[in-house]
Image (cartoon, rainbow, N blue to C red; front, side, top):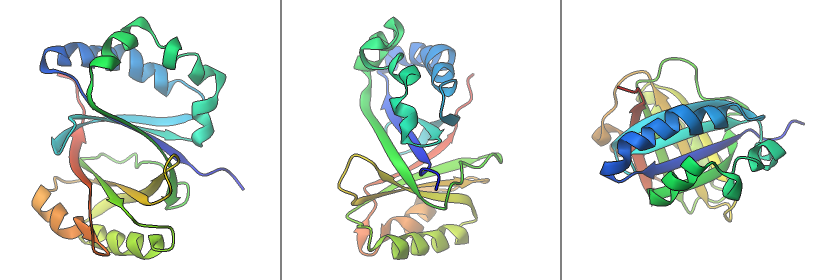
Length: 201
């Protein structure tokens, strides 16, 4: 059996005075560097329209082992570039989440045009409750005409956080999304952000 597909999800926001350089760094160095690493299958950037922090990067990984390769270690941590070491310590709200995909199977983020991306985190959903929660959320997102929904669990926690990544081919508003998936099984979403694809300029 092949290993579970994984996702590297990184959220952050630069100070306003650093945003132009932040995007230069991401576009010209960091993003191309990461996307060229073995085991990194796709990479996409998004800008937050509702929620925080402002910037999101999603990388589909063949498995979490992609983050343990010599190639990855050669450009990470104390081996990061001088530009990375200048930018990263100044970020606000930085979150780096490595998660295993639990549904559906081994699907990657859709290659169809994405108008909006929704990111939701539900705490306190154990593995026993997972199938019912994913089914309920999936039906609600299907009613909103989501093009694709995937569910993930972080690899570094106790297994009680469930994350959803939902792609839409149309704009979706915070009110309709919150009404549909703001709660499941009596649990409120701890994160419910809406993004648009990043386009420079």
